[in-house]
Image 1 (cartoon, rainbow, N blue to C red):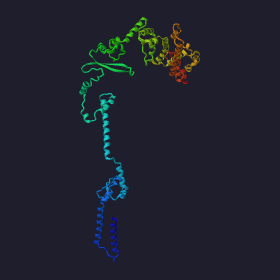
Image 2: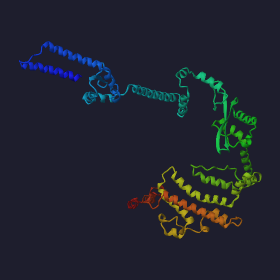
Image 3: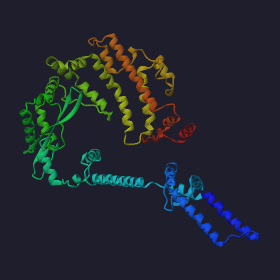
Image 4: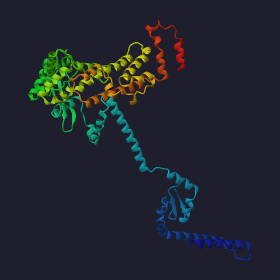
Length: 515
């Protein structure tokens, strides 16, 4: 209907133009032209108002197809509103399609796509704020630990404690637990559950002694330390502390004289003095010290010096020979002592069998022969003064001494020291010919010394393996075939005692250049 009205309007216009060109025809009056235009426009408006409901119904489905459209516009029902461009346009779906292809709409659509929705902006802001607060809290906890000189391991438990507190802010804000309140809680509330394990002196000058025991858990096969008691000490002398410990054990029927193996404390003179201390008082009651007194009686009976047995150290290799010598010195007394203990207590049977075994004395005498060779080398390297001019001769002498004990003499005489094949069994001596020291050879030759051929073979084989390993270790640390080591051979002129016998060092310099 709208199109027809427009055509009629144009035809009417043509009639007017024709009338001007052809005077013979009737020309339309201006008044009728105006009237015709009015009628056409009026008819168009009427048509729009009648079709308003149908047009509105047809635009309701547009937002589903085009999310950026609104199904209503302020300009009228025949307009669509674009939210991207924030403007209204006339037309239907074809007009919408044309508008979506314009540069203005495409630019606005791209800007809207890069814009973060409002509901998400607040969430990002909250996350940033939360992360910042978490970092501030962590820094405060670290500063608290540093300020109060608390162990860093405490932070593992401190954070767990803070997380276990109530999440309500009112509960945390109302908390108050300063020094006075905390002391009262520990003393009156949880004091009956546990006690502080510490040896301390408070402001009232009350002294305490913490007693800790080390025991063996046979269920789990573990050795652990357990807190036993915290006893108030009134008399802080050695006798007072000793009586306090003894009375505590007697009160709970603990056989401390039988079960006490060792005693440990700080280095105070009252606790660990040599003459009168808690240690010396416990030594008189402990059964292990009683055995030392019994062993001393055997030493007196055999007219042996009452020396104590030495304990070897893992870091002091020079003391190993002294420990071995002391056992040899006290061997007869040890045999008699363990023989007596064997008759009383079966626990000493194993020690008695080992000490009374003839090979035990053989190995001790063998070590007494060979250890001084190695000890002399250690002393050479630990000497206070320079000994570089003695180094080659001493090392060569020790190396050759060990080789002479288990290798054929003819082979050693024909072969240079640096070319000796110390691990070649072809040049080894027979078991009976291996030299194991004068004392061992004397014991083996005695008729009273009963030792089977199998035991002798095992003994000589072990000694041979010891010699081979010694030679290997010496050669690895001091390779005689190395040119640098060979240079040490010609440094004897540095010895102050040999300076008068050295006319010139030129020959030594010439020899050193050859290497």
